[in-house]
Image (cartoon, rainbow, N blue to C red; front, side, top):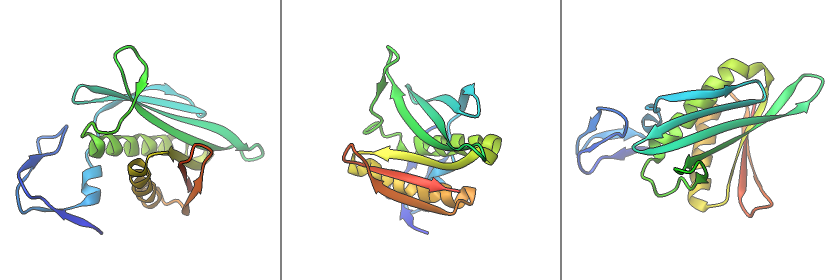
Length: 168
């Protein structure tokens, strides 16, 4: 497990926890502090949740298409973004909120799986930017371990990005 050393005192956003200089922390510990979120749509084919980090509102949508009619298995796509004041979605990069945002997205996927796991065949994320591809790769591997899924596949997409598919 990869660890990092804290070079200067810092706090974890959304918590009262302070890391002191010289502390060593496992990377996965950064994903253990999700923000509070509200589920606004809760159906087997779609789950939508919203949360705020700092002053930035975020929306997560887990949307499924029936992949196997016989078994009613769904392949779910996971979308998440920051929401602007006029309700449009915006970029989530360069906000400084990545650890708590990814922790919250992981918690929402975990809750979705607890509710609808018998329908889940796979979850997928799509990323164009190299930095986001790296984060999605880590998030996919973490969710694979946490949810007990069998594998993560990476494949090129039509948008010059990568799709990460976590399969049951």
